[in-house]
Length: 530
Image 1 (tube, rainbow, N blue to C red):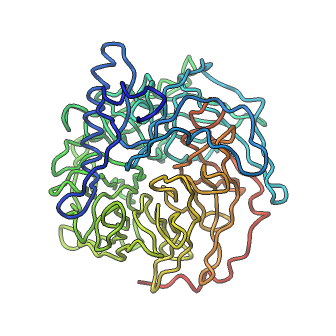
Image 2 (cartoon, rainbow, N blue to C red):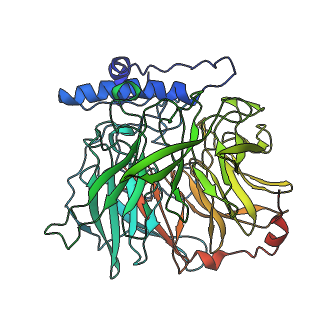
């Protein structure tokens, strides 16, 4: 049985019976095998949409029965309605069950917001928006971006990540209006040439436009479902006559699934001073193990340059978290699999560096995860700052719940507790962010209630974590994939992929976190060159 939502008939209909994927000749349960299955489901979903059917189940993603939590559980051990009657399978994404979508007003001005007080003095957790599954979308997987005026921008994943959704994702804005926040849908992704399933943040460019990626769509490649896109959204030249905003999309590049790559994942796009764009795809490339790309302006359009294609072996397989640009022009990132470690779901993944050399790049593997105390299978990328190079793994470590690491002349580790519900990757799915209180992030299914948490790190040789919020799976949200965003005042913003008033995720804010800050005097001793 796959789920009480949809039942065995839906599972058989879309080929979603619970089964175990066997490793390939290298021992990988490869990203490509997940994605190939996703593509087939997406094609069948697209065909059913034409017939008026809206049931679509992604492979290996938890299917949940419909629910609306209306109260925060009492203190102590709670029941797990989200985990009841579930069959978990190995995958990278999560399927949300079909639920009755509420009607959304075009613009929602929240005068009432959920406020939960944490144990730290003057610290509050506030839900800024509950996604309804209507025009606002559902299931945000990405974090948020802020412009100079303090507006927040984000995406929802849409039909690619949720059964029953009528669109293929949305891009939205939240603007502060006095004590409340104004929610405005900017663009609805249709699932055709314009892409499908944005799972990474949109980046605010200097001209006020937004750039991002979609996992699928963008043409007829990859068996007809599209292999993903890089897109740009431009605001209207003047104040629009309606609240939809009339933002226009331009597809900068559509992946074709061959050597040019396929399926960009959770990683943000990054820009160099010349305006060139860098990113990763989880598949495609010469070995179908993913690649790192650059887009450069060319003749009024954009040209792709393949900087490095992974072989799926020692050098890595499946970069899901994007890359960052170092001060010398080097690129740093992670791969979900590959390397020389052997873990439960295949090779354990890597941290890599790409160095410019002539007309290409040379890869150096900085760390091969072994699945022991160092963790395994990083989904998020890395960050660099006062501590040096920092990142996370989604599973493994001493406690099994993934790790947060500092990787310099030696490796400093913190292991998250994990959970008892057999979720494949309970730890962080996103990169750490250097915030006002220290390196900060989210866990997917860790925490006191095992619906994820918000945390920050401190120390070095005593690298440790402070939890700012444990998600309950109720009104406050559940299962954050999101990275965190800090504003100039130290307030923290993020999203959860599920939970909230309608079960489709929330946008949240944490204020007063600096009151709980523990000094990190040792941080300067961590920042050493490789």
